[in-house]
Amino acid sequence: MSITTVLTVSGMSCGHCEKTVSAGLAAIDGVTDVVADAGSGRVTVASALPLDESAVRSAVDGAGFTLVGQI
Image (tube, rainbow, N blue to C red; front, side, top):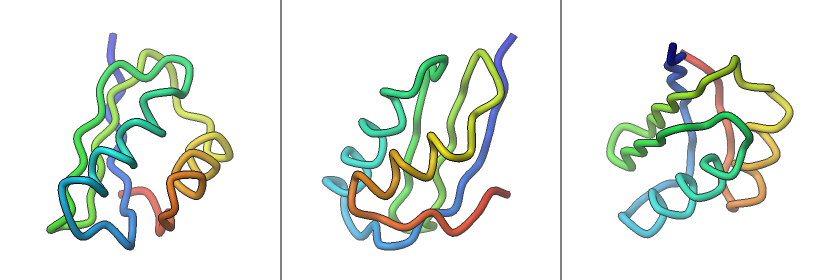
């Protein structure tokens, strides 16, 4: 079973930004897929378990962007 979480991330403006955010989130235990879209500021994360909000915030902050919230 997969859980889909949609995040809003500010500061992404290009493909490189998408890759950076995706790599940070993909490193979280249980994450199986990440799709980031700089144009909309949305990041869709598929995971085997519910995401830990502090781990998500840390990954996004560590990538140099800001987690605005979860949709």
